[in-house]
Length: 459
Image 1 (tube, rainbow, N blue to C red):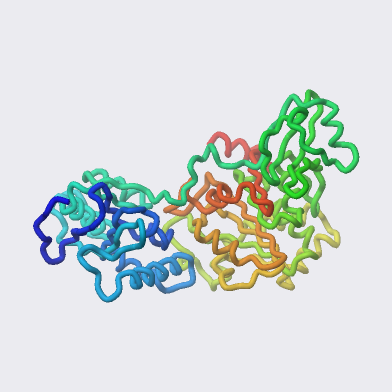
Image 2: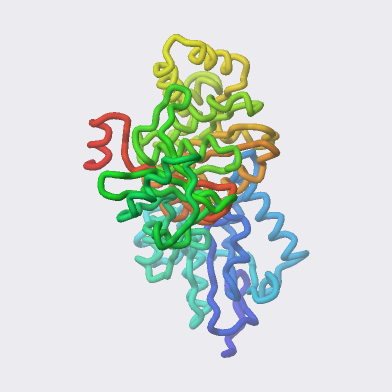
């Protein structure tokens, strides 16, 4: 490695023992809050943590939200790695990994002062990264941030900037949909699905399906004949799927029939339902939960609170319950639909009875942490606004007899640092494909109304 003049006091230069081909990655605060374990996912490259990031993490370390846990976990890990003092070369992260150190930012560069109107944590992080670029040349310095605006500013001043993509799905087009269309099947084979118990053994010559996935669904057609089927991972057979009403809700299309089949299957403990607004994701999940209520100790409906503007729930009037009502109202709306469908019957009265006795509870997702999920039918709505770590945290809390259902629309993400490929919902679908305890269905057709469908397609 070429010898360089030792840095002055306070310089952010990293003297690494790694190869000159390695890079220096500068991490923004939002990357750490997204994944506290990110520092071990940059291979042999070195990591620089601007002192401004530690200042920001200090503001997040108190609380019960996932970002608070991430902040505390990262600070503990960094403290363990660095020991009493961080050397000029940084603290080693482990075998086949680079080093990590905290770097101090100097005075704001004149080139930045002339184009940035005010001082901010983002601008101080950007300034630190630019200083590193100067001192570390010719080693590449890359700013890693989930803030699109900061990435654009970095690129504008000649600094390479990238999103944190370690837990991103490779491609939206390759995301598992949970269903396939099979055409040109022998007419007699279609008839066989309607005979006996509706189970058909695999035969690639007669039923041209290659590599079926556990609990995958199929629309099988031949001219005017068709049948809906799902592949059972336990017996290796294809089973006919019927459109049966569930707690007053009848499936209106093939995808909804597939969804109800998975929701009502006791052997499937994890279900994900994706689809645009009005496709029936939450309604179907709730109807299935009510149908199976006697098998579970409680039905929980939860959703993350992500405001659609910069005003959080603290600005809303009233106590905690009143502040949360606007976020929980869509879940109550689905209950109203089911009540309307069942009419003035015992089934309709049962819904209110379940609410009064807390057997059916609607709650913010943040309030679930720490609870014991034993024999719970747990529905998580708006799952596209969760991070991969939050999804993992929820699922790993599942006890015996618990079923978890995630519903969401990957195209309607309100979280500022998530997108269609990096959100926890897409991550979950991508990683769980092929597991016998898991089923997924993408619902494509909106069933709320003709107007809602038109708006979803055209606007």
